[in-house]
Every structure is written in C-alpha cells, then in structure tokens.
Image 1 (cartoon, rainbow, N blue to C red):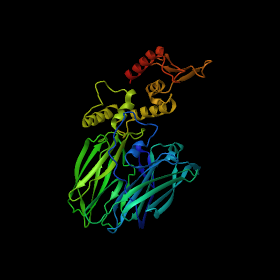
Image 2: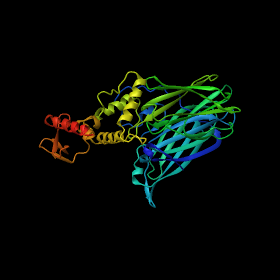
Image 3: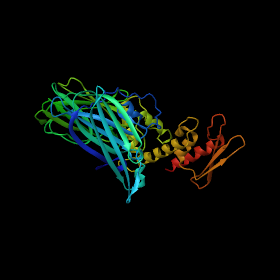
Image 4: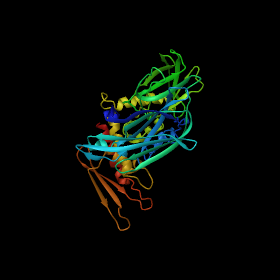
Length: 457
C-alpha cells in the first residue's frame, strides 16, 4: 500500500500494485470524441458523468468507480503490456471498526474474452484502512488500484467486477477494446501518471503508478504524463497540444525523447494552475508515428464533481461575490482561462495553501443546499432556499407553520444582522408546484443582509 497526498493534502490509498506475465489480451477504448459542453448547468446529481462522456469505464451504482486501460510495448512484438487502473471514493465502500481504525475490503475481478472465449483473468482482494470516521465518508478519489498484465494484440471484451467484501454489493461493467500492436512501425504511448521511471528495454516491466482518472485538482495537483516510444531515436521530438471541450487549443509544446536502444521516453508535467476546471484532450504526435495518440484529461475543483467546461463552474458561482469589474465569461477561451486564474488568486484568503478556502466553503454549502432543498424537480442549489442557504449559511433557527390544506404552508428562517438584530426570512409554499419561494416581504431583508455581510468581509 502506498500513500500519496491528494486534494487539500488528504492521503489517498494506493493498493493492488501487481504485475503478471501471463499473457493474452487487453486494449484501450476507442479514442472518444471531444467532450462538448452542451449546457452550463452541471449535473451535480451525476458526479461521474464527465468521465463517462470522455470514454472512461464508469460504474455509478453498487460500488462506484472509474477505470482506464493504458498500453505499452510488451517483451516481444506480438505482446502488449496492459496497465489497468481503477479509482473510487472511500464512501463507495463499507467500513467496519477494527482495533482503533476503520477497515474495508473489496475484490476486483477482471476478465478478458476473445471471440467469446475467456482468455485472461485475475482476481485480487484489497484492504483499505483509515483512522478517522470522516475519512470513511470521503467523496473524492480516495483509493487507487492498479494491475499490470501482458496480453496479445487484438479486439477483446473486457469485464470488470468490483465487490464490497463486507456487504457483498458489486458492480460489473464491460467494454470492447483494441489491444494495440507494438511491433513494426514506430509507436508512441502516453500514460497519465503520478510517478514513473523509464524502462531500459521492453522486457522490463513498467515502473509506473498511473493516474486512472487522468485528473488533477486546480491549484493543488500538477498533471504528469509518461511518454514512451518504440522505434524512435533518442533526440526525436514529440509535439503535444491540449484542447478544451470546444476544441480550442489551450496549451502546446514539444518534448525530446531520451534513452538508448529500442525504447525512448520522456516525462511531461503541467502546473496545477495552468488549465481551468473542465474536460480536455491531449494529443501527441511525432515524425514517423502514423496516428496521433490522444488521452482525456480532467481538471477538478476541490469539493465539486468534475465538469466538462469552465462555464459550468461559472454557473455555480452565481451566488459567490465576484467584483463587478471582473468578468469571468469570455468568448476567447485563452482570455477566459487567464481571467479565471486572476479570480482564483484574488478570492483566495490564504495563498500559502494549495486550495482556495473561500471556494471550498462555498461549494460545501452549495452541495448541502443541492441535497436538502430540491423542489418539484428543480435542483436544490437553484431554489430560493438554496440561494439563501449558500449566501447566508445555516439559519440560527427554523420554524414551520402548517395549515388545513397542506402539511406545511410557510417556512421561516431566522438570522442575525451585523448589528445583532434578528432578521426573519419567510418562504411561502405554493400548493400547485410544491415549491417554497422567498416571500416578497422578505426579499428586501435578504438583500440588505447579504449586502451588509459582503460589505464587512
């Protein structure tokens, strides 16, 4: 088991780093089309939707996880090294208290079929141990599993089954993939990583800890990539570029391959504050490589599910105090990214930490509002109660008034003003819609309280 520091410095458990030389097949999913941001309102009720749209293997029921396959040259031209990586949140598992700690166990079964026949399989059972109850409730990527298998090229069907060993809940997903050939013309592999070391030759097993979700946290985590080529000479240049969900080129650079013999390699790192939150695609090409290599990238914000485009984050910030002079929406994607970085720096109350504490607190209130105040199919964060909760926080007191025709006719929230006086905000129920909009006589009091609190900040 390995620990790495994750979002806000919390540890991420990395388990199951196994390798096998038994060989037959496994393959990378077909390169997904660029993710298109079809709406600026993110699906907070589906935290893994972006990974699904970007072509990852995603399970969102039973034991929720995200998985991916990456490929490198095997020991011979007719063999391929398949790097299977999977990640999930602690909350996806069931924990039991054991001798001052909390433990969960899960099993991973991976089956590979060629033309309907089982050709390769493995099973592994892993232990996850944390030392605080709050760690068992983590909703972000917390546990990483990795397995290396040597397979033969070709079209295969992959099935992944993940089982919670305590409750016996399980999830099974499958996909058809193509295991590439690393023989003949020059080839190039790009693997999102946490840590990697170049191999001396293709007979050596890769020394890689992969990043299964190709994900980094804005402001906290750099994005790192391992490039390995077979048949390209040392000194060859690999050209790379990153495009956003709308196809705009956000970054471009070249890297020189190093090494000796038939394998050359390079490491590429992109800083934690370069790409705004959203889904991206990296494309790598080199002279002599017949087809560009493409891998998806996801940049997230602590406390938020992944989004496809920065516009979705800006939509969520509708209640956050943004200076009128600062416009975060820009048709020019590059200028929009620059404005976002300026906003991030200007709104961060503690620049010495890797996260923006003001936004972490804001998004936590938004998440709670979304969970608590859904009305007639409307997301909780877009309701009047959600708006008040996010901007003013938890009320000091909540009262409900009932009537003969409906269980609840009015909800009253009480707050304190900056001067210490009580402020009453009423939400009046609508029988036709089941919603509770802020009463007209309370709207002025709400706006004055928001203005006073922001003015004193």
